[in-house]
Length: 189
Image (cartoon, rainbow, N blue to C red; front, top):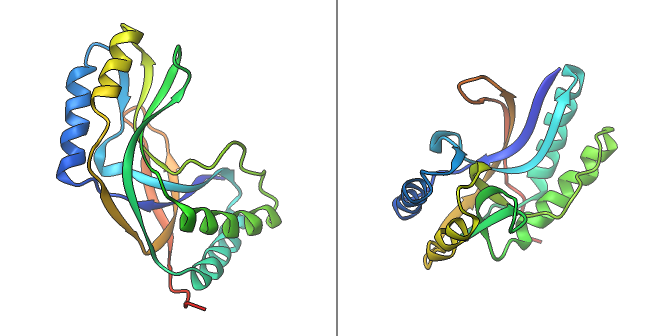
């Protein structure tokens, strides 16, 4: 059994790295587990604990989907929070427009369900996790910081491939090992 997910590797540009450092400084009094920038990615589908026997089938599905999907670009322009106003749980960066990503997800999801995986629950919100919030000192101050740091700039990400990763959780943080990459090379119809 391996803990798996399908994602695209993401590297933040200097503007977004600066925004991240600013958030870390301004929220240093809160208990937030910040994601190592070298591990940042855009998850297409979390698979969870998966029998090794499913891996060849997942690779085949990824190749099929990639061969039918054209590379596309996402423009990151949002800073958001998961959880409620009273219990924020995750700080993330996201996208206002993600129709091509949604189509890729739906194409992949249909085939993954055919392999016997549980359906993906919740709304599709493509995002890059910056930090997981354990505790905030002041909710009011926390939300002021988030509002004050909403980006007025974008970063474009060319989505040209999808990768199957194994995630091993360690006390020092997760270790992600790429197991298979499928290049998006679908043709325009």
